[in-house]
Length: 90
Image (cartoon, rainbow, N blue to C red; front, side, top):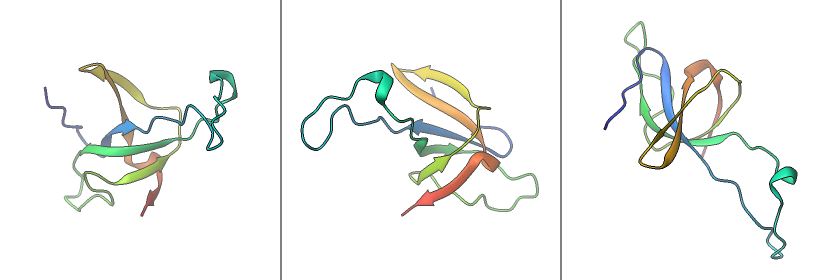
């Protein structure tokens, strides 16, 4: 199944957090710091037909609590508004 966001929205796959430190110590779920990073899987369209500032495959940082979560083939995805993207990691 393919999902194409409508409007200025982006479908992302959140980046999984590390389960242990570089020294080999396992981090419990309660101590993990929530990093909001994801990889762009699909992008919607701009309302004024301009190109959106991200492309498929970009690693991004995002904010906000206004995300729609969905699961496909056992994997977690999020649909976020383009205004919730705060940086592109290069």
